[in-house]
Image (tube, rainbow, N blue to C red):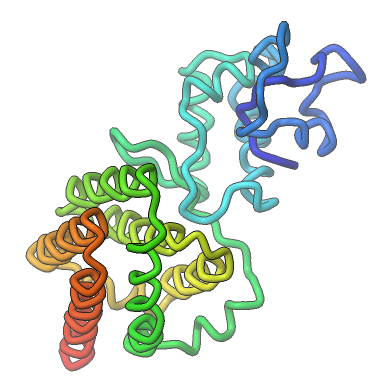
Length: 268
């Protein structure tokens, strides 16, 4: 099973419904290029409606087609893909939210809230938030140096977009955590080093576990989120202006600040 919301799909009439089997759903790739003359939809099936759409999306999420924290296609895209109304798609997404498989944020979209158990789970449960920060201190300054040297103009634009989203979530610890993870992952992607990106994804995996979640409400006050956003903005400006040493200093201070907050929360 693959991502849903594609163009360039097989004929829905062939071999029954396109989505009736894993092989059929596997043809749905969100990044697939359109084929000339092929309609941008999967299958019009008003009988099965929202329950069927819920089942298809649920399976795609559970199968790992969408990673934890990844944004689902927009309601309009899903409606076109499933040949359904946006109201029907919205009902399906409501059900997924009730099942805690997705989180919906007004103005931002729908994000996967499901994380399958992986080989990193055991070590993640043993790693404290402070220990995670110590690992990040060993990794992110050099990662940031590479990001400054290798970031493209498109990378810079994406960082700017992510900062705007994080700043819009200043009163929402859950929303801020999501954008914070994505901002630092984007810096890893700016290095254009696939191993660095993979390593940083493991760091974000650890951040989804119980010890961090238990600490989050203590640490992420509105005032501290505002300060983190200010530091993120400064880091972005240093990357944008290719200030290597400035960016390294900012991210180092940023992580030390986070470590102090965690140590203080541990003592409360």
